[in-house]
Image (cartoon, rainbow, N blue to C red; front, top):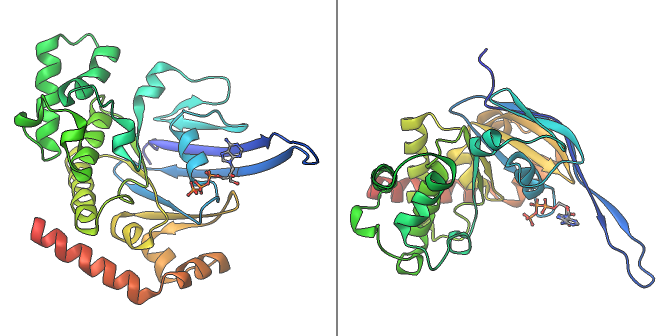
Amino acid sequence: MATPVLEVRNLTRDYVTSGGFLRPAKMVHAVKSVNFTLQKGKTLAVVGESGCGKSTLARMITLIDAPTAGEILIDGLKADAHHVTREMRQKVQIVFQNPYGSLNPRQKIGDVLGEPLLLNTDMKAPERRDKAMAMLTKVGLGPEHFNRYPHMFSGGQRQRIAIARALMLNPSFLVLDEPVSALDLSVQAQILNLLKDLQDEFGLTYVFISHDLSVVRYIADEVMVMYFGDVVEHGTRDAVFGDPQHEYTRTLFAATPNSSVESIKARLAKKAALVG
Ligand SMILES: Nc1ncnc2c1ncn2[C@@H]1O[C@H](COP(=O)(O)OP(=O)(O)OP(=O)(O)O)[C@@H](O)[C@H]1O
């Protein structure tokens, strides 16, 4: 089998919370020895309740936070707490829930998209401009948006910009941390379909962090369920949704009634059809 785009071995992260008066310092085991591999072109969804360690895992595989222990292999290149290279950092990009927070309000969109090229490549200005224009089109925006500022866009358009920026350096995989949670349902469908289209066109690989099971069911190839820092279940979407093995997974799914999952899924599909 081909080298996985992403391999995670025994990835662990502990936090020591600072103590206070009559309050001793405490150790939090946020992520406990997680292992998985992800092949090119696939989407792995990571689900679980608030505090289960999803964001900590996302920050480690994006090389933003160092693990306490374990290692991450990106296209076979190994990163750990002591060793991360610039080449590896370029191979992974993240899209956050709130695109407005991650876009510089004083930067025109053309500059937002050109900046990763300016900082990481030898491309000259006209080439950077061409590539930024082309990427804008790929995410459903146009040349008329090039000289506008972030506040001039809707939430969905801003998320398109964040996705375009994440793709400028041709990363090996994208971490999408609750990328549609802040958007209206119809806009969610548009962004999910955009992600699917981009994945088909470029063979992109996604780690999709979400607490929304209907969205996960719509987008994921594989599902990993986390509970208090542990991976309690990992399988194909159909296996995990169709025949959950772990009691916690069943509890999590029971908290989101199937009828509700189905109805949201149907609404997403209907909106997507209207948009498409
Ligand atoms: N910087 C930190 N310092 C101390 N503890 C932390 C820190 N970041 C996270 N934690 C703790 O680690 C555990 C996992 O947190 P994490 O944010 O990864 O969970 P999550 O599943 O992403 O939750 P949410 O969906 O609410 O963001 C929690 O107990 C949290 O309180």
